[in-house]
Image (tube, rainbow over all chains, first blue to last red; front, side, top):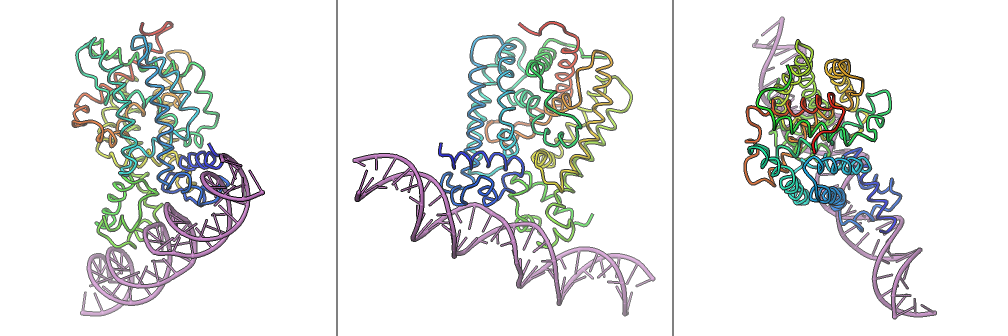
Length: 206
Length: 206
DNA sequence: AGTTTTTTTAAACGTTCGTTTAATATTTGA
DNA sequence: TCAAATATTAAACGAACGTTTAAAAAAACT
């Protein structure tokens, strides 16, 4: 990719994540990227076009990982653990992309809502086919991807959404919490939780 | 509260949630609320002042619930279950507030970052004192509120963040997934998960 | 080398932005 | 009932917005 276009994309991700899409001005962005104002529209058509590329870039990468790790061999535990061990480093390496995607996810701009919906649809289908259906086959039907999907992603995701504000709150470094075994730890919490509610009739604890 | 002020607040929550703070214009907002443009600055000082009130309103309610349900009697399981049974209906009843808070959480506007940080600090301390410390006392130290907090909130929260886009994706009604036992279900997944990783030496599954 | 295509620039377009002002209407309280 | 405080209005402020244009510079190609 042309250096200027690349610089605009990178700067866009950073600024949209830190200031929000609507609060980021194109003059500000162009200056930070070291390019002329008109280059944004030249390469991306519009401000919204830049946002679309950012969303597509992250979500296609996310979908690729889900596709690879959820559809290949193994039982549910193996798949979940494999998925977590790839998706968490991916998100961690693309924190600002992730923040832009999550903060723009609920907004209802008709031009970009289709972009998001088409990706989400694919990912929901993957979780349905590879996790929910096998789970429901083993036990009685009760878990849908619309229920389990957000729970699983939420366990992973919220950390990165609150990290910028945690940085202002927590005295020490936050990275130490994400050690080598972190993806396995999250996978274990999730799997113990899912298997727990599937196997019991009574109550947990007390 | 004065009717006009109330209407501006309610409309602000809805529009910030649907379009984003930065992409919402004050003229648009005033017209939707049925008030004069100047009333926003009259009652809230500035656009940013309106956002601060929205953040404070939701986060103070959130903190009150955490305070009440986490500091009163009971073991960890009881506290978590009690908390979930109050916080999920609270978020559900204030979906748009919640979306505004979450989507504005990572942004670094110095004027409002202190508002967010002071609330987050209090909530982190609660989770630390009431959940992490008792957990770590029972077993060896390894869980911090910065690790467990986002996991717990994420399990609850992500649903409401993706709900607007799910509505475009899922053919049927999403509300059916949130039945009466939903908070207990989430609490169970969380508690089975936490107790699972605390009690094992080996691996879960396969 | 000369030609075509692509990239970059400076300037201006019209619009919308958040905010302020000063005058008017309404409500409040003595 | 009349003065004081509060609420509401229309209009305007300058600044910033996203976008477009036309010309210049650079790169690619023949």
